[in-house]
Length: 193
Figure: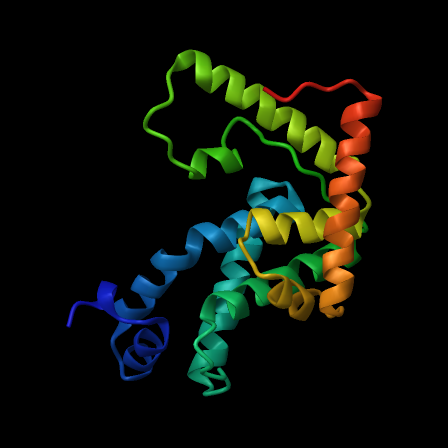
């Protein structure tokens, strides 16, 4: 059977059975979400690349040692490893992440929309920049939940597990993030078009 049609756990078992291509398929399947979530936390391309590589080294090491718990949630597990490495880096450097693109990477480049024309692309880019600027003004815990929910596409249960808080706390942080974003928009008379 072709690797692309296999489920994550089947790819892991194939990899453990010596099929190196199985892990390559697994990596290609999830690398965009994992890299994006790391990048949104560290806001530095070379650091994101380093943490991304370190994440997959830990993943490979854990799988090879037989310590991976096969619950069918590979992506969430991988995101947790990446998140923990980002937190470790943040503690070491005491830098506060912020959401801003650079010339080489923009989260919205990952989202494909073939119907965009030049004008809508410019408007969309300006709107996305405004949203990133608003997100940068949120308290750290609210920003974290917002990024994990909307950019990494995690459920609130997964966010709660990842950040080691209750689901109610994760939901509350998201609620306050939205309230605070609306407040920033109103106070600064920001228009999002």
